Length: 153
Image 1: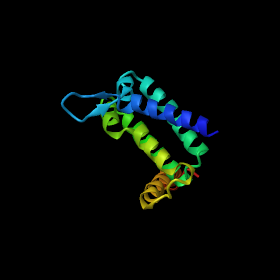
Image 2: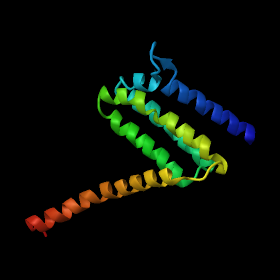
Image 3: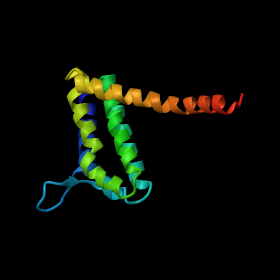
């Protein structure tokens, strides 16, 4: 079992490097990978990153990364996906954000009880959950307002 986990982790490290930091702009410390390059092709970059992100999250679940940290990992992906909606700029932001690298660091830190979630983990996760609740309830509030405002009942 330990050998299989190590192989999976090696696979995830390799692909994180390929997607986020395999290339370096000469004369700078700026690194990027295939993620922003694939992102230039509509849909392709989003699909490739999403598939890999599912693998990372699945592995985080299997190695018992605390749920609060998994929410934080999900938040990294949401930032990546939302910024990716902006053509061109989203690809530049991929170079800076590197959601896969951030999530791999979290996975390695918290796997199998390696570390306990800290204040930042709880804070980020709380903001994510609160934002999700607001986004989910906003259409209901708008509909209720429209019904009462325009007497649609």
